[in-house]
Amino acid sequence: MKKNLIIYLTVIGLIGFLSSCKKDETMVVILASPTAPALTTVPELSLSRLNGTDTLTFVGTPVEVGFQASVTYFLEACPTGDNFVHVTSIMSATKDFAFKITVSDLNGILLRSFEADKVTSADFRIRSVLVADVGTGVAPLVYSSSVISADVKPYGLPRLNLIGLDGDLKIESALGDGQYAGILKLDITKPFKLYDPEANISYGDNGGVLAVNGADIIPGVNGYNYVVADTKALTYKLTQFEIGLIGSATPNAWNSPDTKMDYDSKTGTWYINNVDLIDGEIKFRYNDGWAWNLGWNADKTALEHNGANIAVAAGNYNIRLTITKFAAPETGTFTITKN
Image 1 (cartoon, helix red, strand yellow):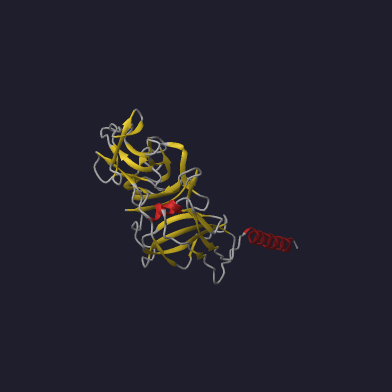
Image 2: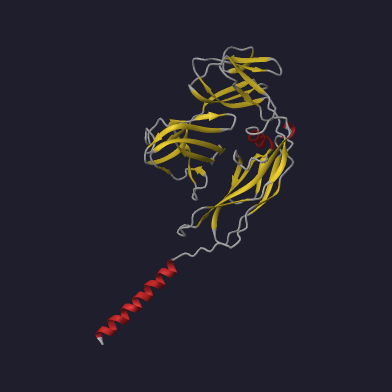
């Protein structure tokens, strides 16, 4: 009788254990035919500087896979027929399927891949990256919309050339309103002037303000600077603008100075090639400070302000960072390629 009781209690315990496991387990069921996101509306893209402050809207519909997931949507473009080998990332969103962007902002992005003042055919899509709720064990899923082709014609930007420096260095006016800006690598031993090739006017310094035929402008710090000039108000300003890597995987670990990245003004991306990292973590920072920093979002699909540390294995890497929104709260995307 005692032996039978022990067996009986053991079976009850086993059933209870299995029931508990079944209750704790999260079942994820993916639809047999998931619905990819759709890009339904692409606005007129023959852009005009006169409409630079207008808002354009790309409209889409959400992805549906049959279970609850966190989703990040990316609006992307490429030359028609390129099959998104060379992707131009326009913007990202997590809730809205109506991507809104000003004409001047979109124009600046399209100029990275498409020739100014020329009609070019482009392909557009929405790419969705899904991450199931924590604990499901389901890997991220990627679904892309069908492609919509449209003609794009970004407008060329008025420019001020930096005279006295090597290379084709310039700052540009997004709205053609006399306000120019750009990120440039400067040297405190190499002064320069600003030259308007359309008006044939040279600008320089006059006691900290801009003046026609003024003196040479002398940078205050070496490295990348955000250079702004207003030829109507006759003002200018140079502000240090460095993006770098920090973290236990980098040469200086969590200490300053950060491992500095270079800037590609054509593509609007920050990059560093052949950087040696050890097993550890990285983040991206602005000017060696924590007020502006990028790490993983909760789904590890994009970067966000104060995001999580990014784990990396030891190796030699090429890293590219695209800042999709610099103003707080900052956002971005990045690629890391092991050599």
